[in-house]
Length: 265
Image: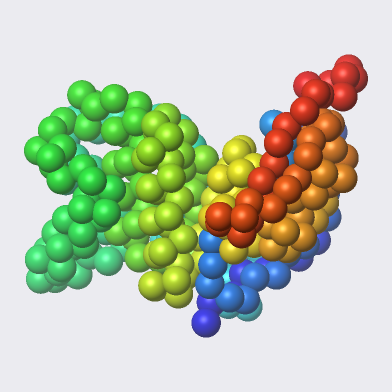
């Protein structure tokens, strides 16, 4: 079973501007873990530390007990997949070939058939088989997002990180993607970390929630019922709300009220 530990991590893009402060987290079971918090609180920076895109100023990130700073980027990519929120990639190639990039760490002699099978399976999951031969550069923002998620799925890593996976997607496909991701964790027994801004989406689909507060600290972790309380939301987001239990789905339902006005947004 895969374990992920973040121990005492601080990070800043320069020493005078610390983004993350003493981040501590232990995950030892498969599931969909949603990271919540206001803009600029360090959510994306935290997952970049986990995927070794950036290096903490202090502390360590361990995958199965091994410090990722002692691993090569290629070895980290074998255990941690990463899908950014807004891809800056430009590929003058087909969707199939673009998704195939995600199979880079699985390339072996004679593996082409297995690679293509995985790519096709991911396209089926993301409902983009009809785009297979389209040029990636010709796609819409929402289609780009679907291709990016497919490229993450084919990496077959025990830890998969998705930064705002539902960005640019319509409401129906947002629901589909979150149901898909939750199902993948249960079917394959992997850890998925996803950054989310919709409290009700997180409440419905997350196995556990990691809530960050300013200035870049973990405020609370636990089930949606434990974390998504009116008191916590007011403290972290600065907004009044009411939290009820949705009888149909059995999860918290957040009804937002008025923001608490201050000098920071």
